Length: 245
Ligand code: MLT
Image (cartoon, rainbow, N blue to C red; front, top):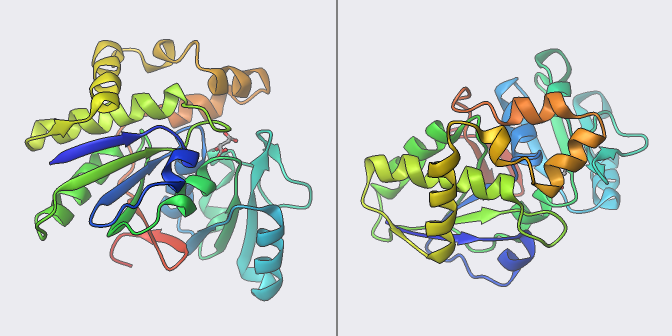
């Protein structure tokens, strides 16, 4: 399997992912939110780039079955039901509902992946489940190319995404032959050296420090819990659902 690592949502925009499986990461916090919302029974999550798109889609859907979530500058958007904290997306609140989500980086990264055969979302929580899913999908095809797309933070590479890419590579390498590109080698090495203490490995990470300064430390800890969710969000026809649904 050939693995390439894309550093930001913006870089992804210029790439043709034809013939590849794309795995999108925004650990803090969009892909952790989406994995949690779907684990907790949300019917689907619709990722959109702008607040205007979210509002216009909301106006077309049944309001009692639809929720709006997301952030700007890491904070809840005025008039929305949720911010971007995974802890808000409980069974009681999201069960059976459509969630329209717009975030600064993560929902752009998902929508910027064009042409891929499969688009899957990963975070620390569901990494093992995603690896099994990717290997299962690859077993049915000739091309064995996987692109790991890190969302980044406002156009810059973000270490939280890189560390999770390193975990994904580590798990894939335990089960398959893997060829890495240069960024893949780097993030895998960083994960390998730091896997015993992920929080310490991210102590200098710009976005993590910002979330902690805004009072979101419990979100950070939740997002760094590893291999505790079996949900694999799959993106197709503009919406995210659990695999096989
Ligand atoms: C994003 O998608 O931009 C992030 O999830 C931002 C955040 O942590 O709120």
